[in-house]
Image (cartoon, rainbow, N blue to C red; front, side, top):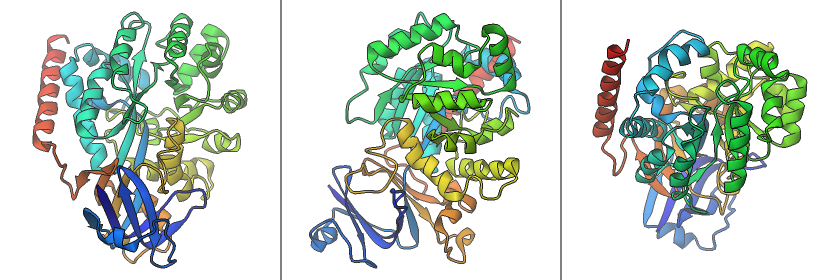
Amino acid sequence: MRTVIKNATVVTMNDAGDILHEADVVIEDGRIVTLFSSLTGEEAYPSVEKRRSADVQIDAEGDVLLPGLINAHTHLAMSLFRNYGNDVALKEWLEDYIWPLEAHLTREEIVAGAKLSILEMLRGGTTTFADMYMEEDAIAEAVKEMGIRALLCPAFTDGSIATRPEEVKRLAAYQKPEGRIQMRLAPHAVYTCSPETLHKVKALGDEWGIGFHLHLAETREEDEQCRKTYGMSPTMLMDRAGLLGPETMLAHAIWLDDDDIACIAARGACCVYNPVSNMKLASGFMPLEKLHRAGVTVALGTDGPSSNNTQDMFREMLIGSLIQKGHMLDPTAADAHTMLWMATRGGALAIGQEKDLGSIEVGKKADLILVDFRHVRHTPKPEDIEAALVYATASDDVRLTMVDGVLRMQDGRFPGQNEEAICQEAENAWRKLHEQKGQHA
């Protein structure tokens, strides 16, 4: 099937930073085969007539076309805990609110929460996410059904190291070379995984030939306790276990000293910036500028929809930029282009799929979104489109989300999905958990 998106302003996110006006994009078999701008007359496709004979034509006049956003760190099923356990620090949030409820979660409830998060992400322009949780093989079925792209990472702790490998085996059945589901292993953190557990996860990753996704140096308390217990920082402890490498994603990465940053850079690991969650839990500020100067790839993620309350990557870009400017007292810090890059190209690099995702270029997969620039928020018509996307755009401005060239959200509707039923299932799951919480209080 051939699809043409016509008359769009295209923010390519390619190496040159090209922005094409009045452009057409031709999609065949889930990939971009043409980028054509009527203003430049440049095209890679040999026939204008083929653009006219498309099976599907989408008029994008007044819209901005972006590569799909990549949420590089989340916990999908925690949408069930949205607006629960607020205004506390991480340790109290986990121990007093989250872990007691998670102990009662069933596979069906995890799927209900995952589907709710997937709807929210598709609505806001996210086409790919990296999830760290339990029962990831069940979440894989939701991903398959709803048509989004995912890197699924079963979470390992001291308490789950004996059983989680069986989940990894079940999840592996969903991983195909050109498929939408890939996997990595997730040793949760230094405060939930002993060095013995970390080494076991490393060995399992080597056996499967896959990388890692973990929490690192999220709070001052984590850093201080790790140094007191092991005589080294969380970064160095993870490195001693062999877990830092080019296929490793380090979520949060806040409490890093210069040696930690140099180690991360030397190993080629990627970091994931989670500004909203970090601020809500008062965890601290990622040393973003230092990481960039060291050559570390930094992606962007929302964290879970309980510590964040949303899966909104546009809000994440805005707040992520503003808090760096305020913290550094530097208005040039974390500029609009940097934030867009982190939400697209940076995410693609972090999950190891940069050859297919993260920019709008011929040959790449057609994971694309359209943002409505006819809104009052975008009037007068902005000259600096990247700034408008980061500082003025809301997730509700996304009017189309496409994965592999297939429409997954258009004008607030989800083809093939029963939005009302998904929301009701999540509501029922929360009510059941809430009742169990009361019984065990």
